[in-house]
Amino acid sequence: MFSHNKRLQYTVRVSETNPGLANLMLEQFGGPQGELAAACRYFTQALGDDDAGRKDMLFDISTEELSHLEIIGTIVGMLNKGAKGRLAEGVEEEGEMYRTITGAGNDSHITQVLYGGGPPLVNSAGVPWTAAYIDTIGEPTADLRSNIAAEARAKIVYERLINLTDDPGVKDALTFLMTREIAHQKSFEKALYAIEPNFPPGKLPGDPRFTNVYFDMSKGDPDLRGPWNQGERWDFRTLGQGDAPVDGGDGVATVVLGDAEAPVVQQMVARTQSYRDGDPTTGAELGMIDQPGTALDPEGLGAESKPLR
Ligand code: MN
Ligand code: MN
Image 1 (spheres, rainbow, N blue to C red):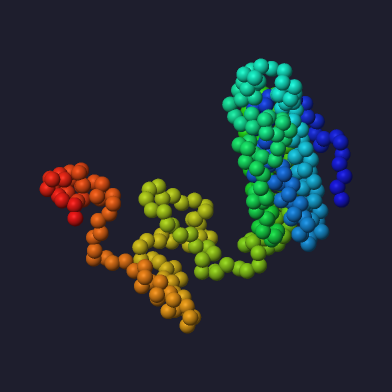
Image 2: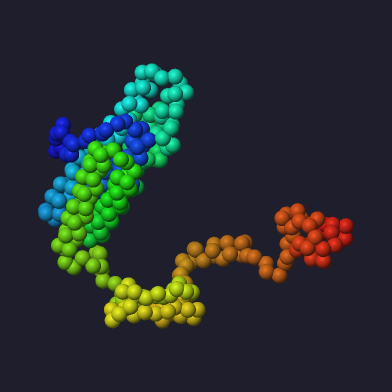
């Protein structure tokens, strides 16, 4: 069960209203790296996890993310408060009001007119939140890696938002939210290493012929080496024309068709066959007939000497 505590997890003190800044904060309310996405990601993972310790951690962190959603949503509401009041009460001339809510140079007028200044579940560009932001696959060694990356991304978005405002109260609350993502990243990383083995993800081992091979497939300078492809643990192979396939086969794709499938496929192949010895005139070429030097008039004689065929 859930129960709500009316106090925020961290105190929010906004120095002045700023609808443009409010709109940017929506990135962490309804955006892909935002708090709702994080809360739903860990909550659904917790429901599906069979390890008691990891399940408990996922419920703890998902519930904290909901508390972060409350904080960032509260910041949005506070920053929008002034414009919301003025728009609702119609206290300004229309032109002046228009400048107030559009002057920030972003989509804050959408937030004001469409959502009345409250925090909508959209990102800072007005794109609705979607469950497609959550990439859970239901295998902890893969999901924990994704969670680590998700926390890293959330940390970076907070860092960028902190660099956008000089409001000390907003900076302070954002710094708390950013810091908690660092702590979550640490928990997820520890939880990943608490599973042994955790690499490769899942149960099936890789094909040993290829697990330690590095294919050098991008040609041209610079062609650089680093720990990701050099040293005793790597078999570095430069692949050129003629080096494929790498499995010792003939590199040709085959499929066995059923008795009913074969004649239909052959019929389709015959119908869509191309004739390589013709040279059909195209509409584009007909349009170029008056232009000397083009394909239909290589000598540059012009339309007079080149009647349409
Ligand atoms: Mn968070
Ligand atoms: Mn987090």
